[in-house]
Image (cartoon, rainbow, N blue to C red; front, side, top):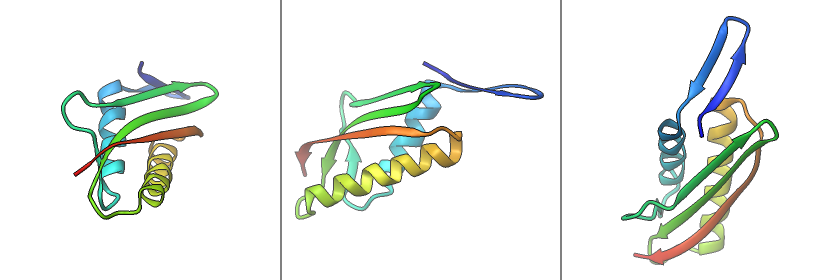
Length: 99
């Protein structure tokens, strides 16, 4: 689902692929985290109430998983909040594999 901002001069639409790219880059900015490869495991729901993100991670061996997940949550929430000006309700992180 696209995210649409109503502005005084018209609308701005952010496509699902652009949102997915934004979230993927935010996740991968965290050292040791990657969006799970293969069938990408990433869902983004944006409504008037805010955004909710669900992402499955692949983590580098040796990182502390709860810390990694919290860092991913913060990075993703910041990226969406800054770039789309939408409140992030939740970022649900699931560590699915360790590389």
